[in-house]
Image 1 (tube, one colour):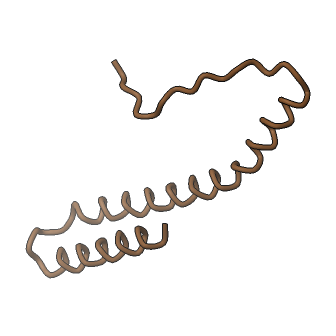
Image 2: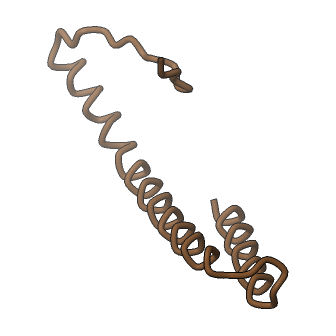
Amino acid sequence: KMVSFFPIRKYVAIVSLEQHKRYKDEFNAEYEEYRNLHSLTDKTTKKFRQFQEQWKSLTPGSEAYQVKKDKIMKTVLHSHSSV
């Protein structure tokens, strides 16, 4: 059984052109923000997948391991501060 972390919204039926326009305007007003957040999330996910692949080949405790760890931490902190 899958548990949803997001509340399920119940939408009322659209019964008028005015109501349709309001919904459409609201959607369009927020869609660009959604696309921007989606793009940012996608880029961050790709970075971490790359880090994960690189990480697999490193020996824990080695200098290369520490350098990669530091780079990842800087990326995480930078990504977090820019949100």
